Image (cartoon, rainbow, N blue to C red):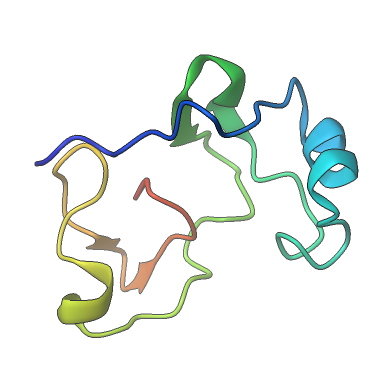
Length: 88
């Protein structure tokens, strides 16, 4: 797949708590839970096993959400899309 564009001017956060504080997205920013990303500070936006982002997205038409994730894998696995750029 195509590389995910990165905004070099975008802020980075050392933790989910720092993201909540810095972005103003607290209990409503991501269903109120840490998405358990592998290493967002280093740019690794994959979700760990046990992430609350697994299978809770909204299955939209492929024209809106695409057919592959950040690794080129199927966008929907186990019937429901994951929240975020990674499908686990």
